Length: 339
Image (cartoon, rainbow, N blue to C red; front, side, top):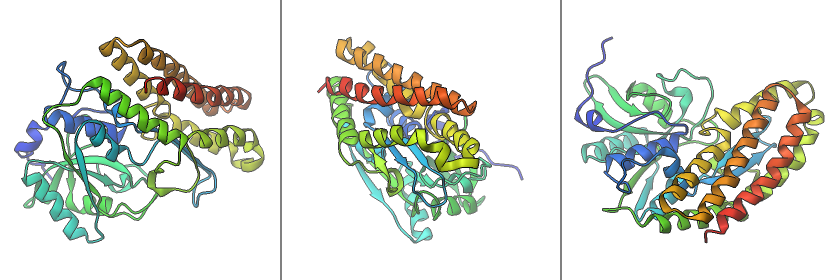
């Protein structure tokens, strides 16, 4: 089947591949709406950092998986609006027809929506992993061809996707929880707020994410924030006894979750480090630069842990986890020095 050319909105919708789905989608949307700090479109790392989405979750008592580890909070898509002087309207429905019509209406109004889609049902990805919290932007649609065009962080170009595929993806009941055709509509400001103010607002949110009880991705039950870091660090030495013969597969999963599973690399710590360095360069702020240095060291330790896990080097992995435990606290303290 030949795929028709995309309508006018996709032709003008700016998109590029990104490390993480939500920060990539939000980066695209901010450029689409012409919002930046006067030096060109924002980078994905800057968007992630200004969202305040940096967090931590570890769960080892979840149904269907040996454990789950993620370095962001569930409220990332919500919080970025407040930090950048805007508002967000979140809508969900259990009626697939009503949900799809709302998406089409938003596109018709020139406001392509960010939505949650299960990657297992997106035909252009051809993956087996289930994840109902994969963020994409639906840019345009064609009722005659029953095709929509999607901006996805995992692809360089906008992707044609059949209505049937999107219907399954938008209304999945998979892991971590049903996505219920959830869509985000943003009312962005005419101009972004002062960068210093936005950095401080994001730092305040990150502090709450790590020191209080954050909104876990998909509402999962486990340990979050610094308490989650401590739980992970204390539980990891017992993994050989906990997982026994499946330990090699579990270590392989750990490496994937740290580097590849929508994390932007290094459990989102690489995105955070890049964000802080970019902010420090722009603001010429020594405290932000110091926070960037600690965040970079933390990112490197997560990358080292992924390498140790992938090679099944438990001794090295244990040492990496010890350093991570220390650096997670140090990175947060350096960020809180900005407040």
